[in-house]
Image 1 (cartoon, helix red, strand yellow):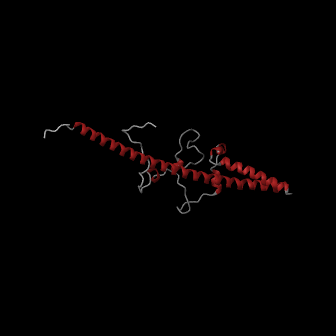
Image 2 (cartoon, rainbow, N blue to C red):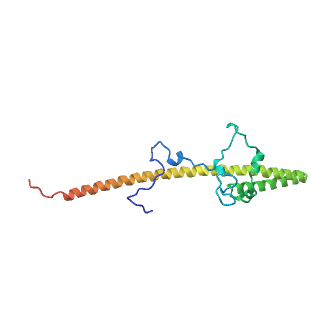
Length: 190
Protein backbone atom coordinates (compact mmCIF):
# COMPACT_ATOMS: atom_id res chain seq x y z
CA UNK A 1 0.00 0.00 0.00
CA UNK A 2 1.54 3.25 -1.13
CA UNK A 3 1.32 6.08 1.35
CA UNK A 4 2.21 9.76 1.37
CA UNK A 5 4.97 10.55 3.81
CA UNK A 6 3.75 14.12 4.24
CA UNK A 7 0.21 13.25 5.31
CA UNK A 8 -0.21 10.73 8.15
CA UNK A 9 -3.14 8.29 7.90
CA UNK A 10 -6.33 9.03 9.82
CA UNK A 11 -6.41 7.14 13.11
CA UNK A 12 -9.83 6.39 14.61
CA UNK A 13 -8.68 5.21 18.01
CA UNK A 14 -6.33 6.59 20.64
CA UNK A 15 -2.76 5.34 20.78
CA UNK A 16 -1.97 2.28 22.90
CA UNK A 17 -2.14 2.94 26.61
CA UNK A 18 -4.75 5.70 26.32
CA UNK A 19 -7.71 5.43 28.67
CA UNK A 20 -10.33 7.21 26.55
CA UNK A 21 -12.37 5.12 24.11
CA UNK A 22 -12.26 5.93 20.39
CA UNK A 23 -14.40 8.82 19.10
CA UNK A 24 -16.82 6.56 17.28
CA UNK A 25 -17.64 4.76 20.56
CA UNK A 26 -18.57 7.94 22.46
CA UNK A 27 -21.11 9.08 19.85
CA UNK A 28 -23.23 6.12 18.73
CA UNK A 29 -25.72 6.67 15.95
CA UNK A 30 -29.29 5.57 16.52
CA UNK A 31 -31.64 4.95 13.64
CA UNK A 32 -35.37 4.38 13.89
CA UNK A 33 -37.26 2.97 10.97
CA UNK A 34 -41.04 2.84 10.97
CA UNK A 35 -43.46 1.40 8.43
CA UNK A 36 -41.02 -0.63 6.40
CA UNK A 37 -37.37 -0.33 5.60
CA UNK A 38 -37.52 2.87 3.48
CA UNK A 39 -38.15 6.34 4.93
CA UNK A 40 -39.96 7.42 1.78
CA UNK A 41 -43.70 7.66 1.31
CA UNK A 42 -45.41 6.38 -1.81
CA UNK A 43 -44.98 9.73 -3.57
CA UNK A 44 -41.19 9.67 -2.98
CA UNK A 45 -41.03 12.41 -0.35
CA UNK A 46 -39.22 11.70 2.89
CA UNK A 47 -41.47 11.25 5.88
CA UNK A 48 -40.69 13.36 8.94
CA UNK A 49 -43.41 11.92 11.15
CA UNK A 50 -41.20 9.06 12.29
CA UNK A 51 -38.31 11.33 13.25
CA UNK A 52 -40.50 13.58 15.40
CA UNK A 53 -42.51 10.81 17.02
CA UNK A 54 -41.22 9.57 20.33
CA UNK A 55 -42.41 6.27 21.73
CA UNK A 56 -44.69 6.84 24.67
CA UNK A 57 -44.49 4.50 27.60
CA UNK A 58 -46.39 4.17 30.80
CA UNK A 59 -43.53 5.84 32.69
CA UNK A 60 -43.74 8.99 30.55
CA UNK A 61 -47.39 9.44 31.41
CA UNK A 62 -48.50 8.49 27.89
CA UNK A 63 -50.61 5.60 26.69
CA UNK A 64 -48.83 2.27 26.26
CA UNK A 65 -49.31 0.82 22.76
CA UNK A 66 -51.26 -2.40 22.41
CA UNK A 67 -50.68 -5.43 20.20
CA UNK A 68 -53.66 -4.58 18.01
CA UNK A 69 -52.24 -1.07 17.42
CA UNK A 70 -48.97 -2.70 16.44
CA UNK A 71 -50.70 -4.95 13.91
CA UNK A 72 -52.48 -1.92 12.45
CA UNK A 73 -49.10 -0.38 11.58
CA UNK A 74 -48.21 -3.34 9.31
CA UNK A 75 -48.88 -2.51 5.67
CA UNK A 76 -49.44 -4.84 2.75
CA UNK A 77 -46.10 -3.76 1.23
CA UNK A 78 -44.28 -4.92 4.37
CA UNK A 79 -45.03 -8.54 3.46
CA UNK A 80 -43.27 -8.04 0.13
CA UNK A 81 -40.13 -6.86 1.91
CA UNK A 82 -39.99 -9.59 4.55
CA UNK A 83 -36.94 -11.15 2.85
CA UNK A 84 -34.97 -7.98 3.61
CA UNK A 85 -35.28 -8.46 7.37
CA UNK A 86 -32.04 -9.87 8.77
CA UNK A 87 -32.37 -13.52 9.87
CA UNK A 88 -35.93 -13.87 8.52
CA UNK A 89 -34.92 -16.53 6.01
CA UNK A 90 -33.09 -18.61 8.61
CA UNK A 91 -35.99 -18.38 11.04
CA UNK A 92 -38.58 -19.32 8.45
CA UNK A 93 -36.56 -22.23 7.09
CA UNK A 94 -36.04 -23.59 10.59
CA UNK A 95 -39.75 -23.16 11.33
CA UNK A 96 -40.88 -24.84 8.12
CA UNK A 97 -38.71 -27.89 8.67
CA UNK A 98 -39.56 -28.20 12.35
CA UNK A 99 -43.27 -27.66 11.76
CA UNK A 100 -43.35 -30.29 9.02
CA UNK A 101 -41.44 -32.82 11.13
CA UNK A 102 -43.56 -32.12 14.23
CA UNK A 103 -46.87 -32.33 12.37
CA UNK A 104 -45.84 -35.43 10.43
CA UNK A 105 -44.57 -37.11 13.58
CA UNK A 106 -47.81 -36.39 15.38
CA UNK A 107 -49.83 -37.75 12.44
CA UNK A 108 -47.70 -40.91 12.20
CA UNK A 109 -47.95 -41.42 15.96
CA UNK A 110 -51.69 -41.85 15.50
CA UNK A 111 -53.10 -38.39 16.09
CA UNK A 112 -55.94 -36.88 14.14
CA UNK A 113 -55.11 -34.66 11.19
CA UNK A 114 -56.41 -31.50 12.92
CA UNK A 115 -54.26 -32.23 16.00
CA UNK A 116 -51.25 -32.92 13.81
CA UNK A 117 -51.81 -29.65 11.95
CA UNK A 118 -52.01 -27.77 15.25
CA UNK A 119 -48.77 -29.38 16.40
CA UNK A 120 -47.15 -28.50 13.07
CA UNK A 121 -48.22 -24.84 13.27
CA UNK A 122 -47.09 -24.63 16.89
CA UNK A 123 -43.74 -26.19 16.02
CA UNK A 124 -43.39 -23.76 13.13
CA UNK A 125 -44.09 -20.70 15.27
CA UNK A 126 -41.89 -21.69 18.19
CA UNK A 127 -38.93 -22.86 16.12
CA UNK A 128 -39.18 -19.82 13.83
CA UNK A 129 -38.86 -17.52 16.83
CA UNK A 130 -36.03 -19.59 18.32
CA UNK A 131 -34.19 -19.73 14.98
CA UNK A 132 -34.59 -15.99 14.45
CA UNK A 133 -33.37 -15.17 17.96
CA UNK A 134 -30.40 -17.52 17.56
CA UNK A 135 -29.47 -15.85 14.26
CA UNK A 136 -29.82 -12.39 15.85
CA UNK A 137 -27.54 -13.39 18.74
CA UNK A 138 -24.94 -14.68 16.27
CA UNK A 139 -25.16 -11.38 14.37
CA UNK A 140 -24.64 -9.43 17.61
CA UNK A 141 -21.58 -11.56 18.44
CA UNK A 142 -20.20 -11.05 14.94
CA UNK A 143 -20.71 -7.28 15.17
CA UNK A 144 -18.91 -7.20 18.53
CA UNK A 145 -16.05 -9.25 17.09
CA UNK A 146 -15.80 -6.95 14.06
CA UNK A 147 -15.75 -3.90 16.32
CA UNK A 148 -12.92 -5.50 18.29
CA UNK A 149 -11.00 -6.24 15.07
CA UNK A 150 -11.40 -2.62 13.94
CA UNK A 151 -10.17 -1.41 17.32
CA UNK A 152 -7.13 -3.70 17.25
CA UNK A 153 -6.32 -2.71 13.67
CA UNK A 154 -6.56 0.98 14.57
CA UNK A 155 -4.21 0.47 17.51
CA UNK A 156 -1.73 -1.43 15.38
CA UNK A 157 -1.92 1.33 12.77
CA UNK A 158 -1.19 3.91 15.49
CA UNK A 159 1.78 1.84 16.70
CA UNK A 160 3.16 1.53 13.17
CA UNK A 161 2.70 5.25 12.61
CA UNK A 162 4.55 5.99 15.85
CA UNK A 163 7.41 3.66 14.85
CA UNK A 164 7.55 5.23 11.37
CA UNK A 165 7.71 8.74 12.87
CA UNK A 166 10.49 7.63 15.20
CA UNK A 167 12.45 6.08 12.32
CA UNK A 168 11.97 9.23 10.20
CA UNK A 169 13.21 11.38 13.10
CA UNK A 170 16.31 9.19 13.50
CA UNK A 171 17.02 9.31 9.75
CA UNK A 172 16.71 13.09 9.81
CA UNK A 173 19.07 13.36 12.78
CA UNK A 174 21.57 11.05 11.07
CA UNK A 175 21.36 13.10 7.85
CA UNK A 176 21.94 16.32 9.80
CA UNK A 177 24.88 14.77 11.62
CA UNK A 178 26.38 13.58 8.33
CA UNK A 179 25.89 17.04 6.86
CA UNK A 180 27.72 18.60 9.86
CA UNK A 181 30.56 16.09 9.44
CA UNK A 182 30.84 16.94 5.74
CA UNK A 183 30.82 20.66 6.46
CA UNK A 184 33.52 20.35 9.12
CA UNK A 185 37.06 21.20 7.91
CA UNK A 186 39.50 18.35 7.58
CA UNK A 187 42.44 20.50 8.51
CA UNK A 188 43.41 22.51 11.61
CA UNK A 189 45.53 25.59 11.80
CA UNK A 190 46.47 25.12 15.44
